[in-house]
Length: 185
Image 1: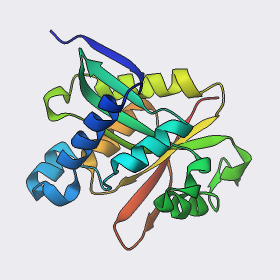
Image 2: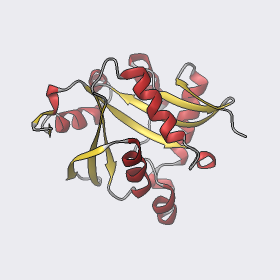
Image 3: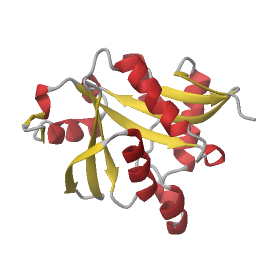
Image 4: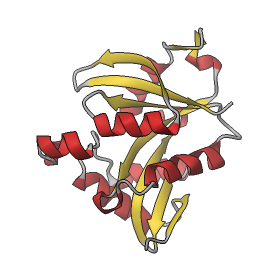
């Protein structure tokens, strides 16, 4: 039986495990069949970037004893100073509307990336990650926003199950994306 517990990232060893899990689940290293059935992540986060992000706002993990079963990265607007991909994301998001108001009217942050180890999929880890996000960050933010590749069906379904609602769809040079919002108000 697994001994799961969600928490914030507290050590460099945990960041190393996140980095390794990130590398193992990149779209570029997973075959198309596995991408369809298991999902994937789109970006590789370097250790340097993970450390900088963690220094601003710790990300959420679920552990089974000492092994990370899954992670969900926190991406705040303040991180655009050192995370160039976030500059593009936030400039795009700030042009969107939610509930007939500019998204900028709400306090929000972004899910930088979420990934669950293959050995732990289907065990409720995603739900635990997001519940911990809400517990840690809902007193400061009204919304959690993320974008999901439209070809990542597993991720689309997992986010819908948690309570995320689609607000926008677009295509860029990399992929087609659904922007989704989880409203904590």
